[in-house]
Image (cartoon, rainbow, N blue to C red; front, top):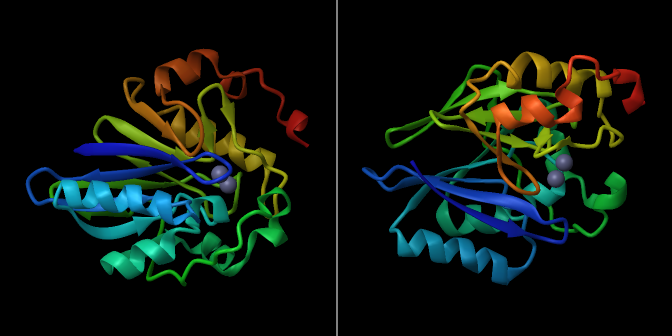
Length: 219
Ligand SMILES: [Zn+2]
Ligand SMILES: [Zn+2]
């Protein structure tokens, strides 16, 4: 599996282009850009590596992760995949979402839905879907052989906010404990914002993943 990470948009969202070497089939995770120059960087990667984008996968529906869906879809014909519980957020502008008010570009509607246990297959690469609600009701993580894409559920040393509509402190802690902390420790964590990490490092040092973390602190 090949991977390129770009940090895009005013909230510095991590957008990932991943592809299978053998077939050149690719997916784009969280194209959160609303500037043409940033879309151009993704198209450059696609062209340079002769890639065909099969899917646009959103780790969740917030506009800082989805507002480039339309431009990527119209250029590549790729299908938009998201968890059903976040699909309705695609048609909501950032002004309904408090601090995401900078984002005015709406995503087209989803082409298909992802659920816990589904797989996203492109070429010989397979990513397994984990439903990891809490930051939003339909937040997902995607697990590959060596890595996990955690969206805004898990960051290096922190976690996503739970105060946006549909967020839940209890749910995010359950997702972290029951879905992410049980993954192989060697997996590299590719989060929705900020630097990469590993499951091992997060279990050791992320305060929200410690046994004694008090969920009531999240409100
Ligand atoms: Zn978010
Ligand atoms: Zn985000």
